[in-house]
Length: 400
Image 1: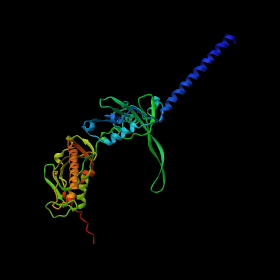
Image 2: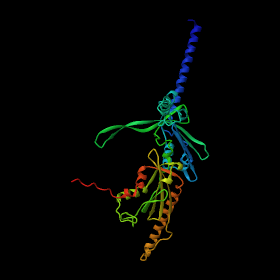
Image 3: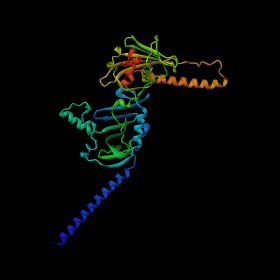
Image 4: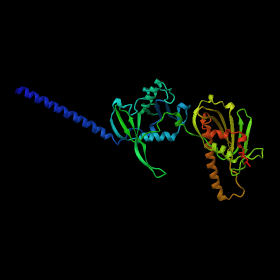
């Protein structure tokens, strides 16, 4: 080897060593930057008060929830009021969301991590797809598809867009009532793609509330019948079915205009069904067929009057329902003749507070008259009983 060749070889070796050192330094710098983000907020600039719209998209559908002057609404359900507590809970989790792990994303990992964009999969709901080759392909695509969660401000500007992937679990030992120890997989995180499309993070919450079913985001507390006094049932065209009442809220129920005994438990079942009416969904009134349904009117001791109409039953076992509410609220308090002066101020204050609460209840429930609902059969079917079904069950005679 000549001197010139030796010097050239040494030069090449120096260049290679320098290049290797530079690559290593670059890699070290990149991993250092990546490591620094672990433990920090995923969305550091996100503020609860700035969020005015939330859109969730999955392979089977989507939901858009907006905040207007009257509050939060679900646009896919004719602007029905949304569950504010659920919305706030999810947004607060996003504000406080921290990174527990972060690394570069390789495209062939997307399916494994359930991070395929929803638009890349079939729009058909996997539960409704027929068992054909195309159907199986659609199911497979939906299985690997993530959930898009986007937040916007009041001007429609995007505040953040996340693609939520596979839920991360950890094994937790739990004791059964029988004293056995079992191991369960408990959700404690989720794979997420944020602003950086080529980076995947594991965050500290599974965000299981981020689902695209509009019914999940509806405000469920429609109306509450309290202290019922008289219940009257008619057919859709006004023919009487049954009526019963009680003189005070501490005595038994009895049929109106009849001495026939009624089953008090069945009577109470009807009242209990109306104490808290929770909707399953909001629906199109054209499918309800209220004209051939059943109506139940309820008068309460507090002056509220509810008229509840039941329509057809759906193929999923839910009943169509709508209602109206009115109230005859006293404007002045009836003062007892023997009321002491020291009791008057306390009684006046209690009356004022009660009147205010009733007025707010009436206003809140009146706003919900405009929609048609789907409710469970456990709420509807006790109220749909015939009069004969409200009588005590006949006991079988014992065979001699």
